[in-house]
Amino acid sequence: MGWWGRARAVAATGWRNATVDIVRVFVPRHRSLRRPPPDIHVRYREGTGIRLRAMSSTHGANALADFTDRLAWAGGWARHMVVLFPNGPRRPGPYAVPAYALTRRTEGGDHR
Image 1: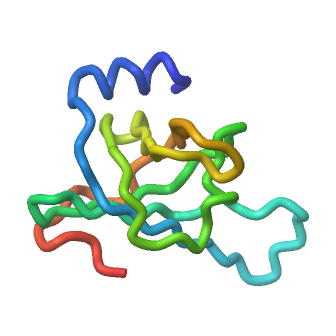
Image 2: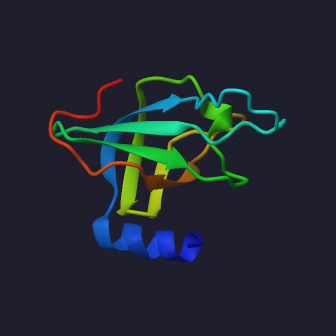
């Protein structure tokens, strides 16, 4: 389930324009110093949406948490998804976040 599998999945599905919200996941009584990866709420232009969970990675989404209505591209399927932002949190240039689907794609987009 590494980048190779995600690259193959994105090659098969292509990139889709989307608007993305990064939402922190709060775990009650979580004693670890590490925050769990955030959820990514994706809304595609044609009105459908999907909820993803970012995966732990050096390209994590915690640095992007609490951002709403960010333009991005999403591609892949199931456990092999990637959200590509035009700029990273600390430097310009593309920033890819590995993710997996929490829900199926739904009509009407994913509600915040």
